Amino acid sequence: MSALAEATIQHIIYLLWARRDHPGLNTFFHEYQQTQFWSADRIRDLQWQRLRRIVRFAFERCPYYADRFRQVGFCPDDLREPADFLRLPVLTKDDIRQNQNQLTARGVPPSSYEDNFTGGSTGSPIAFKVSKLRMASRKAMTQRHDYWSGWRVGKWAGLLWGHPEAQPYASAWGRVRNALLYREVVLNTFDVREINFVRFLAELRRRKVRYLQAYSRSLLMFADYLSKQNIEPPPLESAITSAECLTPEERQLIEQTLQCRTFDRYGCREFSVIASECEAHQGLHLAAETMLVEFVVGDRPARPGEVGEILVTDSLNEAMPFIRYKIGDMGTPLDGLCPCGRGLPRMQMVAGRVTDFIHTPDGRWLSGVAINTYLISQVPGIRQAQIVQDQCNRLRFRLVESGQGNQAAEDFLREQVPRMFGRDMSYSTEWVAQIPPEASGKIRVTISRCGVTHGFSGAVAAAPARAGVDPLG
Ligand SMILES: [Zn+2]
Image (cartoon, rainbow, N blue to C red; front, side, top):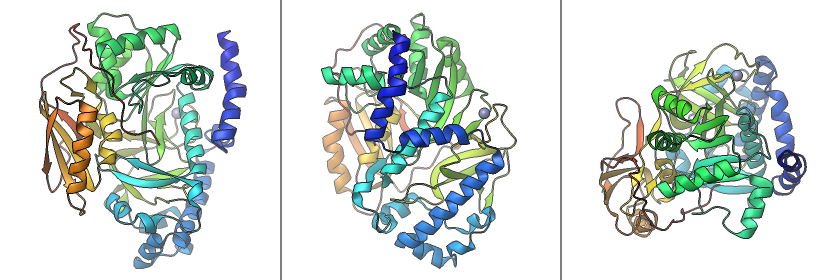
């Protein structure tokens, strides 16, 4: 029965849903399933052809690029070989904040794109636009990379991440839709409490879930909980971890406790999945068909194995093309071919975003990634933010202004902080010139020094669940 249900969803329901709600998704997915096994040269040719196209498109349709390219004496016909790409100017988050209109492509109807936003990997919020067709291709690319973990459409998956609804799929229709299409068992990392771990575990067992997807540190917390409480984990095959860095020891704790392989992933809201581990676990394969990921040291490319700053060019998003976008992460390009046989280039991540859970007086833990995704991304008029919990009932928001004054941000926090962290959490704001990364290269979006560990002593807090602030884009 279960296999029949899975097959029905995979081969009928999902395809019909995708055709209606995300035109292009099925076609993109089939394309990416093929292209991943093309030779490295053939993939590079495809990538280069698409890059040349988007650079010309951006030059012709976006006043921002027309100006910037002219300033450096560049015209699209100059783009003859990949080395020419280095001549193009870098796009920063400040450029995006200050040139929203000039970066939006002319002649692209507003009905063909969606507005999106991000807290960014460094707590630096930006707003941007994504073509609906690109959204479909992003979903298809994510699906391809999900397949590497063994998961398939129609199979149940356990998710440990921030969800905009306190209790996803709570309505009768929501439950039906989830059972017949999405098949997600969700642990909302806005509201981590022992009772929710217990419910999540019971649901994983009831649905016979074999695959997890998680913010890395949320999964670590879950593994730590099972280990400390001596709870046998449900039988799992794989867990996809993303959104923040783990040490090798932390990864080992997850794999040993949960008895499954982890598949690390690098992605962000600007582009969705950027790179993922395949079953060979030898670096992360880049989604090269839809983007160029450069690793640069100053104005030269990093050598294989050398750490460089990451620049991303999205070759398919026409609504607001991002060309050589400085995302704020560091990574290393890898040389050679992967034993899995895929021709996609590979990379390795370098210590990037690390977040602490924030513990609230009403007994919840909130994932730092969820806070970054749903709170920091929404704060108006700031360039960067960091939240420090010095005491259990007090937060300090360290903020960098973007030149539009502080008032809008102050008003926003006054409304949102009690909503997200509860009325017993007080806070203060501290306006600073910048928030540099730590000496180790780690970027901490949330820091908790209140000394509470997630030992779950057995006293289960009875605070009501709260909704997040905004839906996923
Ligand atoms: Zn591989």
